[in-house]
Image 1 (cartoon, protein in one colour):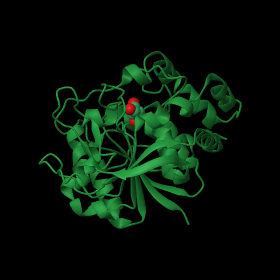
Image 2 (cartoon, rainbow, N blue to C red):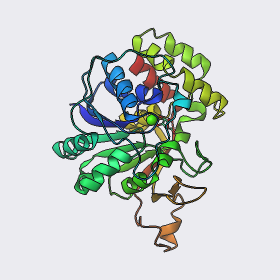
Image 3 (tube, rainbow, N blue to C red):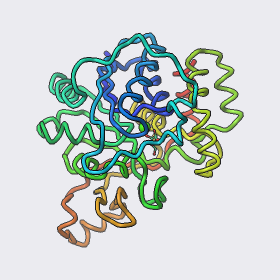
Image 4 (tube, rainbow, N blue to C red):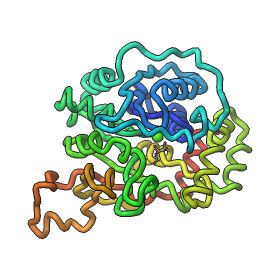
Length: 320
Ligand code: RIB
Ligand code: CA
């Protein structure tokens, strides 16, 4: 019996690896990939997703979605992922065409048609998901798990000291999703750092698998590798979307987690996009609910750490 999954993505290099993992993992059926503006324009994201899916020998429909965040201007990240988002590899156009229809409609239809039987994995800004929830709020409880790659759980962010990119791009959308009542799990960018980053030797080990998947996964991340090391100060290749996908595929990889109230700062001059995690349950225990804390009950399962050795083994399995 396969588990059903929808992936929402702003497909650049690490998204591509996550999409590949879901298609290569044994008991997953990917119903749709929906594309949102983020790392890339939606056209470039769609092109990269379709190339990745075709490489896997699959025909998963790819729907183009929201072309910009709800309120802010787009802030693409070609500077991080390379001029094509795929490390400058300039892969050819896939034969697989973009599916007819809008990503937001596809999200609503697929969730309704697979009530309580579909997992949602988000790898980009939450614009598409928020738009779907605005149109059809009743879909929130129909999603079995929504695993969000995004945020920074009371740790430093990557695009500002306070915020992680996916949430910072569209904080209003993130707030809608975090307040929606969906069964949310958050995998912040910190989970993919430190021991979870692939060292030069581990990258060589992946190449040694000698499959098209392994070569693709490492080649398209060459630009991201340099940025991770030189800009983020990480020890190797950080694969944020794939680490979130790994926890979606196998929740036992998560080694430290907790369920907390989490909300998103939308207006802070210095803190826009910050995921505020009530890690010590201060709000509830002190009976302090300001107007700002609309979230009354713990609403998000936050993953803080994963088993780095097992995550890398899972990655190698998917690429082998
Ligand atoms: O902050 C990490 C996120 O932004 C990931 O989704 C990755 O694709 C990136 O660019
Ligand atoms: Ca992404």
